[in-house]
Image 1: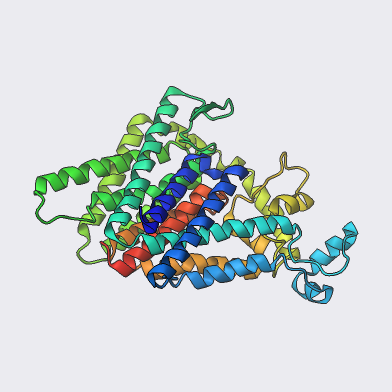
Image 2 (image 1 turned 180 degrees about the vertical axis):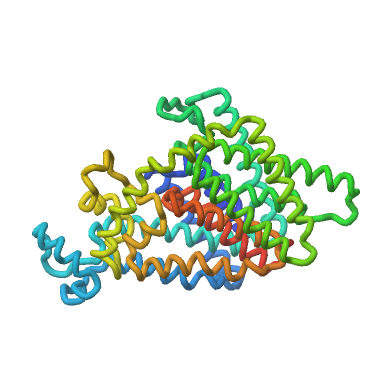
Amino acid sequence: MSIERIIQIGTISVIISSLLLFGAVQPVVLSIEESLIIILALLSVFYHQRKGLQVDWTPLSYPFALFLLYIFFQVIPLPPSVLKILSPQSLVLREKLGIAVGWQPISLVPYRTLIQGVYWLSIFLLFLLVVNHFKQKRPLRWLINSLFYFGIAEALYGIFSFFSRSQWLLWYHNPHLPTNRVHGSYRNPDHFAGFMEMVVPIGVVKSMDWRANPTQPKTETLAKRGALLFLSMLGALALFFTLSRAGLMGFLGSMAFWYINEKRREGQRGVSFALGVLLSLLIVYAFWIGVGPMMDRFNTAGQDLRIHVWQNCLPIIKDYPLTGTGFNTFEQVFPIYRDITLPVTFAHAHNEYLEMLIEGGIIGFILFLWVFFKPVVWSINSSSLLTRASLTGIVAISIHNLFDFNLHIPGNAYLLATLFALSWIGVVTRER
């Protein structure tokens, strides 16, 4: 087996296993996944040197690299005079705690920021692995098929668990699992919704037969597209019955964005028609089964504690505006500012952008937006359906992240990095 084949199989295995193993949220699982990605990245460097090939860095690599450097910069000890300019409140806090001695880093909890730096490094390396080793049609087909059919398997498993009211999560029983919401192999239905909203657009790509064979009979083509569109609908249906309000808004918003983008393009009526059929069937079937639980979830939006959490976050931004408190420190910093009327504390802000602004400050927030903006630039007017479908998944999770923390779910973050890579592959290879 060649080195490149090992890298390809290893990369697909990392992506799928991170999704299957509850989103890789357990520290042990995440450590294994990160280690495997680093090993694969080293193998890739060896492979490129051995073959005399150049690494495709892509336009996204530069803002992503700056974002990574900024994370690690937050753990570098700085003289008090510099820290007073960059983060004066961190000096005040350390003086109150009696630890303001000598040089100090920007991050209030450096070891947690360092852990987060390694995490984002693994996301970046996975992006480069997909970009550099899945450009050819065959490995690209393997990757897309793996993502789509795994997603459908997850959807079917989730729907089965939903109708059987099972509290088994794969191989172990969890009495705290909700029986009235689809969750797949995830502990949290909202994060499962984040996974499905990124996978469903890939099904639309397959239903439009992006590897179209002109010699194939028309009836066979239509049957294949219809079957794949039906499977995509099952994935979307599973997403609907996660009862995730943010997931539904992200999915429907992104599909509307995709539909409008296709309608304004000449010669893309087939895609917009497929999207219209998918959404129509989904809505009809959802109403047939019953949308009462979904409506109940939206009716309770006013009781959501997230709004109060966001209000408590504003003073943190005011105290640490430029450089933030340090990545991965929200859980330690928030209790200092938390309103005592909140019944529980929170590990995340349930808004990735707000949390990024708190932990990274204005500098980190701008770099973060730059990373997300780059794929939009190269995707919005691309002639590649694969690119535009990947962009739809990126838009979906971007909307969802206004109300959740999918980027802190490793499986979903790795899948997002894969969509970034697929969007670029579609551009450079002009893969339909």
